[in-house]
Image (cartoon, rainbow, N blue to C red; front, side, top):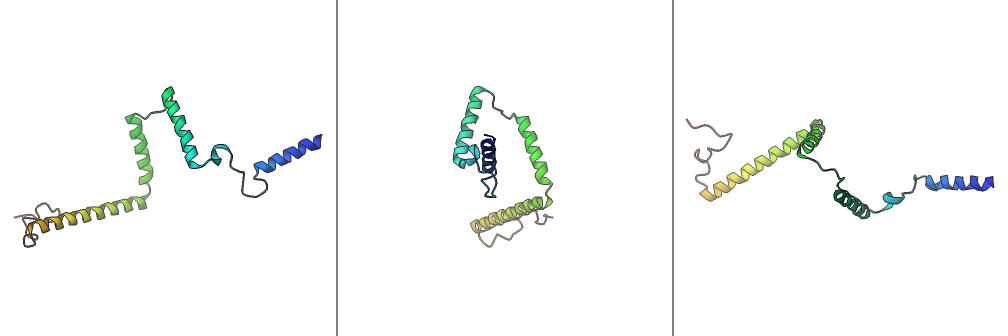
Length: 128
């Protein structure tokens, strides 16, 4: 009888270890489901918690603190922040050029380069 229990234990431990295949334990339960099934079950749980009144809801102060914390983490990566700034500068330049081109075609090519048209330009010269 002892051999039967021992054999059962070794078979059970083999199953937990992935059946000896070397790929780790087989997925079971929630982990074995596809993503849509998991999402559907989680959604039902969230709806039930809201109906019961036990669901967590962020207030504006808590949301502000969470956003600030996330921003601090992101801003530690200087390379990422430099990329963001570079993209913003490129976007601003292209938008400015497009607006200038649109104004130039609407008014005519002969007035596009005059100083009166460049009053709003930040890099333009000041009138004397």
